[in-house]
Amino acid sequence: MQGPYSGALIALTTRHGKELALSRVFAAGLGARLQLCDHDTDQLGTFSGEIPRLADAAATCRAKALLGMEAAGLSLGLASEASFGPHPAMPMLPVGQELLLFLDQERDLCLIEQRLEWRTNYSHLLLEPGVLPDAWLRQVRFPSHAVIARPSLPQAGGMFKGLSNHVALAEAMECCRLADPDGCVWLETDMRAHCNPTRMRSIRRLGVVLVRRLQTPCPECGSPGWGLIDTQAGLPCSECGTPTELTLSEIWGCETCGARRSQPRRDGRLSAEPGQCPWCNP
Ligand SMILES: [Zn+2]
Ligand SMILES: [Zn+2]
Image 1 (cartoon, rainbow, N blue to C red):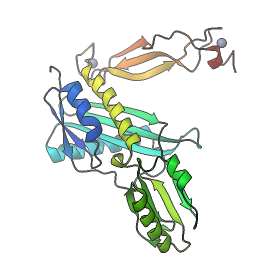
Image 2 (cartoon, helix red, strand yellow):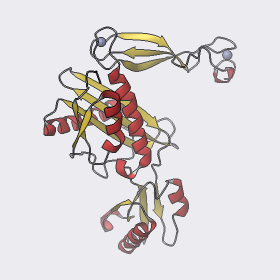
Image 3 (cartoon, rainbow, N blue to C red):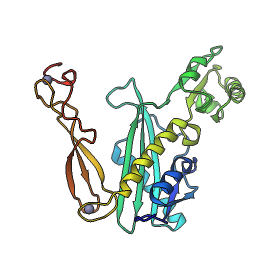
Image 4 (cartoon, rainbow, N blue to C red):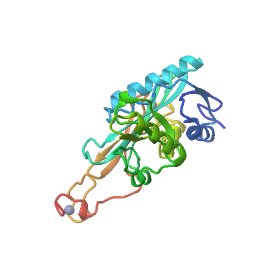
């Protein structure tokens, strides 16, 4: 396979099995191999229940990638970062923000792909004595997605992570009830990637987008990494022509030389439904 990263070795910083989501994508798309660096900074409990600003999440992700690159002595690195919490504009809706960052020190290239994941199972539950969590467990897709149990009073005792079968969960809940002064149990979803297939799918999707971008050279300078960096709203209404919130055009660009090109939507759509128009359907 020909390409800028064919045969390359890329450091992947993870302790949570993210290579399962990314190795094949990078091998098939770029001919690159991932070298695992068992040095993860996202310890349990750092999922704080808030979505940080993108710039802050990106800085954390970059630091994580650099840790792995230093440990492995490689100039190429990959790391991912996630956070979960209420949607900033719609507090009733939990969302996940997934980030995947690629660093190439020789080319001085840093690419970030990110997505808001609406299908996240992120949730928690305070369980009173005598109440069964069955409905909640179905909602968070247990046992395919693992959960965490602890006494409702955090000081009261230990935490049981990665619970992914009914026997282990029942035992953990019993321990937590006995340790808690009120007999209450705190349950939450275990968001670590290896415990959460929904996250694994998100990470793989980001990997596909990132690889496609690394396959695409900039039309101006030839550097890898040409891709979508922004969208411009204003797709006109099909009835009255008023610009809507929908994407009118895509801005593609190159991080290396700063080239930018505006191009029509990839789906070829030229107008919006009147239902989405602020004039026809305010
Ligand atoms: Zn360029
Ligand atoms: Zn209209």
